[in-house]
Image (cartoon, rainbow, N blue to C red; front, side, top):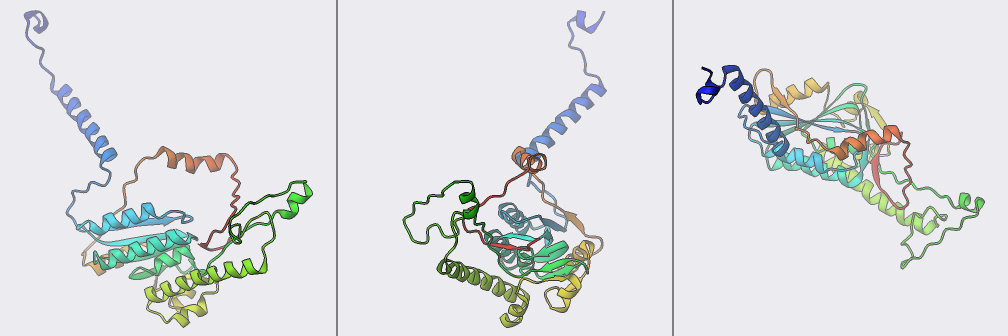
Length: 298
């Protein structure tokens, strides 16, 4: 008589139990990765690799990664892989400050590894690290500030459109694309630019232990190769990413082949769309107003 007809509960086969355990295990891993992506139970000494790639528009992700790795006792040093022409002034400054906090508060070495390009805001961030390594052909430097605006007043007149601005202060529409900028307004914006440029120079001088006058002589927006930057004392050594990782291991006392970890990326539909949409549809980058950038023009 079968188990079903005898009233007895059927026994699970060994294979069925294994499949059930594996399925539950996979589900738990997915849930942990989804809700606790930063959970790290390892106690092994490791090197963290944080990548700064593309134009720097926001600092939140990078600052968060630096904070988490700085507070993780198993992370003994951090390598910043910079492949960026720079970007916004404030995001660059915020990442610079975050690097300094890791060095001073967490007492961990931070090494910069320059990729194809690490210029302007990218170099600003690198200047905050303990050591900078660049490839001989890396494009770096571009210590300067840029502000770009368009004047479409002539175009509007040609098509019979008149721009109207209502404002409550004489400088409230400074940089407006609807009219030509006055000499007084241009002088005002230049003073702002000069101050932000001075901040850049002072940050590089402090980070690189150089005299302000020496940095100022190089801070005219020019770019350098990695080899030229080393001669100018803007870079410490020539080397690739592997060299930077090994240097970080040596400075932190890790023997043998260092284990490298990178941040776990949360899945984001928004980020997916933002990365895909520009490739499908042309973007019009029309920005009215004042925007300061530590960005290499290209």
